[in-house]
Length: 202
Image (cartoon, rainbow, N blue to C red; front, side, top):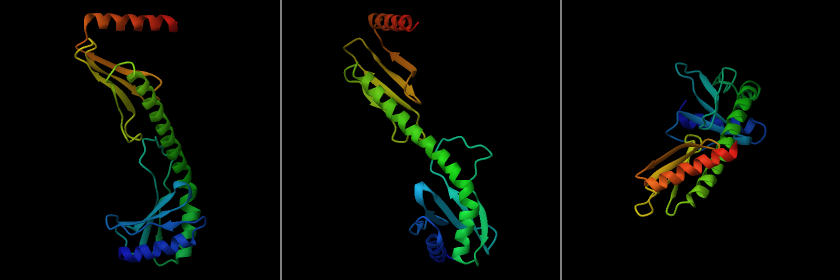
């Protein structure tokens, strides 16, 4: 079964699924076809390796750093290619989705939490950057892979030297501070401020 034939079958299967599933356009870089459903659900259909007569069907997860344990499943199954599209759709509904959707929900919740954490980190970093003229915020566009935001500065005239303040994960705390070429006076002010802050928190 060529990819064009597989895509035609996938379209028929999607049409037989409840809740408005669709087959994604053909993609020559993929060995199969994605079906897209509500709530970010995606199911991947491909030829079963080593078996000419069967299809492999499995839930697809977005990129994430979510911790998945042995109980989390993508609901992988195999079915005969000769079965009618409506029967394949029923197998997906009955055997794949009940195991896959809870795992997808867990991943999406984790990813949403990462996005919120990045927004908080970036905001706090921008507020810290205002304290030093010319400081910049360095952040990533991918909150699922990069969990830190930093404030960087470089000064040759104010005695502040150059350095970085790194905020990680939820952005409520600073995980690392690096300062170089700092004047003794500036170092003294910084350490006194740290000591005063620690005293106030006691």
